[in-house]
Image (cartoon, rainbow, N blue to C red):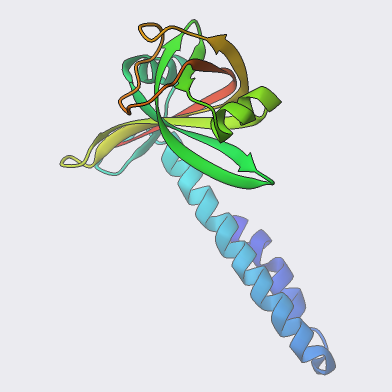
Length: 180
């Protein structure tokens, strides 16, 4: 039944006059591409909600499960706008404290994004490549500069160099998925 609804625009295009064949062919192709994309998305959504524990099965994590993954991690990826609309993703050390993601930073584009109060995304994963299982959590929020901290405070960076500034991400939305 859903397939009939999705294919209805294609049937209408097939009955149109031939003199606009080029434009109709383009519209037909675009419609079929859209139908395929919607169909694929419906399949993925159905799989996500499936209670199956087969290899490769996808599951949405609860907010508490997402927070648990965040609390266990040390390394994640910060996605932010570096300069003039250019996106960047950087691996960072972090801690998850009091519902916020804390990242130590030196001067540079990450800190500048926080000083601007930019919207950012932060991702952390728990992966087992041998078993092909894992969990991935994404935090969407606003970054802000939360001041300076001493070397022994806050998240401990693995990379050398001065990182005296603290960036805080206040989550607006947290989502997560598990596979396998």
